[in-house]
Length: 374
Image 1 (cartoon, rainbow, N blue to C red):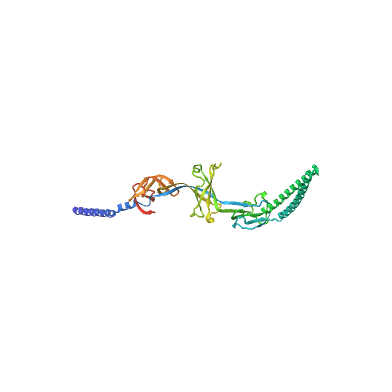
Image 2 (cartoon, one colour):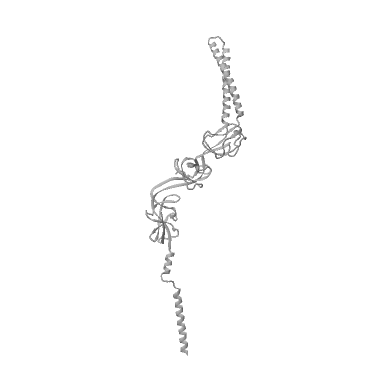
């Protein structure tokens, strides 16, 4: 009986051992699965670009306000009532084109009066001139006294002065008539109309609106843009230097120009130097009073090793692809711009530099090249 009980316990024990062994075996992963997952997890997908020799330019970037090439508030030199405005806002006008005019009826009457006074003065002068000529002949013949001669001579001089005075009054009336007619001093666009027909205007009283003048004429066939430059950068800028301009309205367009003015003294408040850039405006795409970004090319290196800025980590390291591994390289940087930089030391032409997936890599880490950027 005792023997049967021991055999039963032994059987149960053997069954339990076999069950636990089978359970442990079934929980183990297939052979090679763990290593495969580990390899897949430790490989980083990357994109690379080949190191090549190119030219690179270093540029300085500034923001400035676009201004018109010429701008003038058209105001007559004389006061009066505006009789007519012959243009509208947005009109394109040519040099000499009639823009507006004052009521000239009173000025015309003044001119008629001045012409009449000048005619009388001219007649009196001629009469006094003839009297003086006769008196000089008699004086040479000792036929008249010195007193008589001096009297006639003084009358001639007075007639001459009256003639000059009448001539000046006539010229003034003509000038007032001329300046009452407002013509375009240059070709451009009517930027604003600042007054209405019937308004009284007096130049001595100042502007009649924030823009001043009867109207504002603007020429932006070329444009000017002013920028402020620090003391550190002003020594790298000179007159005639190449410049480029980009505005938000046309981000794909690059407008070319040159530095035209470089101030030699800094502003007393900002401590910065004023620089003026002149830029061509083909198609009149650029409009005044908008902000733009000016870039000035200050230095260029030809036939040097160039890589994208995004390849560089901590301002001095890059990773290159060497087979299935990443190799960390320390580089010496030369010229830079917003997107590219020159490599003086640390890389060779033909190296495949990692530009995407490079952050978080370790020297010797496993990589998989997904794309070679051209």
